[in-house]
Length: 106
Image 1 (cartoon, rainbow, N blue to C red):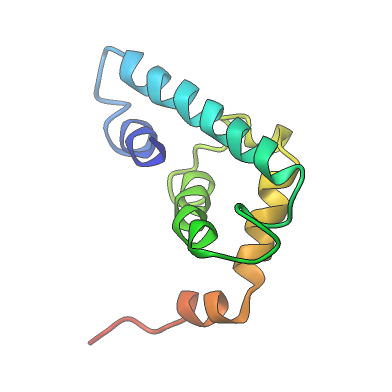
Image 2: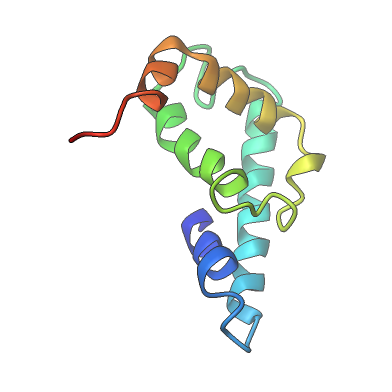
């Protein structure tokens, strides 16, 4: 959903006269962020007390939604408390930092 919203918001949204697809993906992405927010209200990480593959799988999508796609305002990201905390904790992990700063392959 986040990728679909990103496509319609950043790449194709301005060209499509019919804004319903972008609105649909924005609403569903906002709903999904609400699910994540609720889940993270009672735990540090998505599934349990430990960082797992679930966190790894979701981190990139949430990061790109508010970063690369610049769609935070569409999904009211600023109103969230636990998702931004979780994303910051994910991004602060040393292995994630190393991965994000890897030089491009030749």
